[in-house]
Length: 312
Image 1 (cartoon, rainbow, N blue to C red):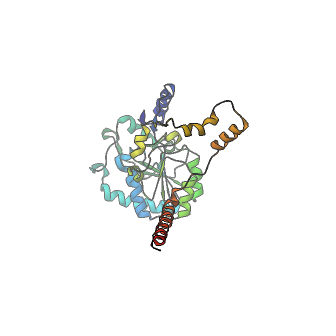
Image 2 (image 1 turned 90 degrees about the vertical axis):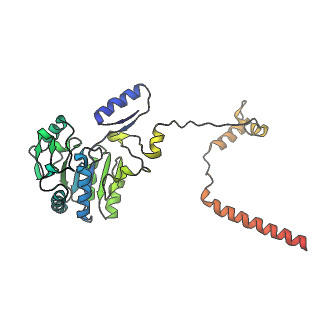
Image 3 (image 1 turned 120 degrees about the vertical axis):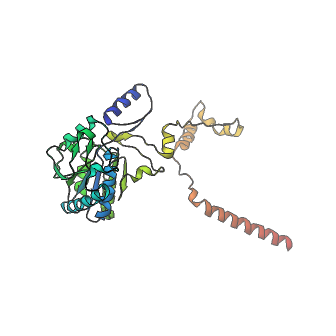
């Protein structure tokens, strides 16, 4: 069974699969964090983050759910965001043909409740009759705020301030493992620290959503954000049982060599069987080309030697 949807329903599906011993792949969701530091190209980063967040009005499972950055980066981000949103959607975003609507009234009301009492830095306009919600950015957000309790799945982008990669790591690790994580930084040490010390379904560095489009990469969650993976061959493997099959003949020599497995057992038989069961270092094909070249060289030398001796 393959299920894409909420964690609540995913648990129901998983429980039913367990009762019937049915394998399943769950692609759920979560609050996918987006970290930005001062080394990033803020102008480019802002465009890529806003695109990933507001495409389909934020109603995608891997949309950046919230931003983690310093106060100084937040200031630059907001300046760029105002300019970018005006460029994309015009003075009145509601009239833009490129900005879609919320899927239904129930979800619209859910999203509306998230920004009540919040500090709206950008957007915040709504029209329930059209299920319209403007691209909205919130600041001065706290971890206990309503917008930080569940996956947003809408055009609301909260910004929380952190002053170091480690602070961001601590914040991310204190919450459920997300489906995706985004890192915007030119600092290799900071990127490596975030990648190595957090757990999530997948990571995209200096862009958003891009890893989803690469079919050679497995896509899936971990823990509350899902299990197993798909895309490309990984999708085929999810629906495939790898059935092993060993075929042997009735060769007398092979039977003789394997006779130690038959009773009656002796110390020598058990010693031989123990030797067979020990892990042995396999032959590395890395050196095969060199071995072949060496073999060809030796063979050529022997052939030349034989021809020379015959002539003499």
